[in-house]
Image 1 (cartoon, rainbow, N blue to C red):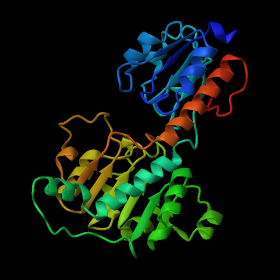
Image 2: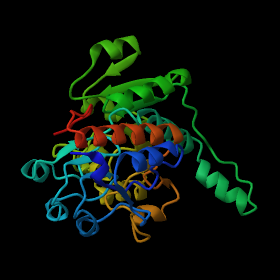
Image 3: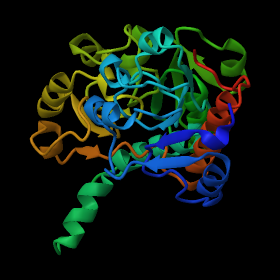
Image 4: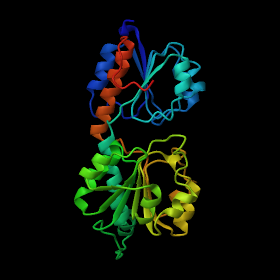
Amino acid sequence: MDIKNCRLLVTPTTYGKYDSRLKSKLKDQVGEVIYSTTGKPLTSVEVAHLLPGMDGYIAGLDTINSQALETADRLRVISRYGVGVDSVDLQACKDKNIIVTNTPGANTVSVAELSLGMILALARQLPVAMEATRRGQWPRLDGLSLVGKTIAIIGLGAIGKQLVRRLSGFDCHIVAYDPIPDHKYAQENQVQLLSMDEALPQADFVSLHVPLLPETRGLVNEAFITRMKKGSFLVNTSRGELLDEEVVFRALIDEHLSGAALDVFTKEPPGSDNPLLSLPQVIPTPHMGAHTDGAVNAMGWMSLEDCLAVLRGEEPLYRVI
């Protein structure tokens, strides 16, 4: 197929934000590009409305289920702008012979940097301090030094390893759990590999870096929280569905947890009625882990090149299915 005749749907809100060449290349390469204007991930109904006549789809965190794909009469490729594909019905894509790609590694540094920032913000009560100072107060807030503290990284994959690298200068003790442990990496980087049961009770901070899979959905449940050290902190920059939010809320109210920093929620946006948002010891952010210039550019180019490769009849570099 001559890709000059192709139509492309692009929905990530940050696509081309830092590198205008991305949009220029798409305009030059394909016949028509449709950009989402909602400013947020699309629902399955919204996706279904836009897919008729589309040959390619560069997708953000949209809900791409079987209902959304019913109207995909020409779609050949979904190029995920990001690494996670939990919002894409892969079986439905297989049934319709739609290739799915992603952008592994593009946002690892950015997410690790945010995770570190959240750990530091929790340790020094930065949001509370900022708000009090703005109100004209001058509180003497207690803070924690990371020196000698134990940081547990749950999921020692690409992002977890980048977090280890950034924590290495803080003189803290790093422990990690991963179902497929990288013993060589752990030994070379002074990371103690432990089971979940061993890691949680000794950790002052627990940072989650596992993908959303059937076995990790609801990972942070009553049993998980109970095993965590009293007074510890929880950081989640992975997926909101890893948490039972009600359990986390109760643990914060009961002061079993001293605080939590959450970049992701089960429902996004969570809505002002989410009780976690009412707690001053919770730092909520709007799923911004990948929203840096470096990550946005990398995701943009990787998703563009794979999408165009499929439309040209070539094998993409980062094929999922």
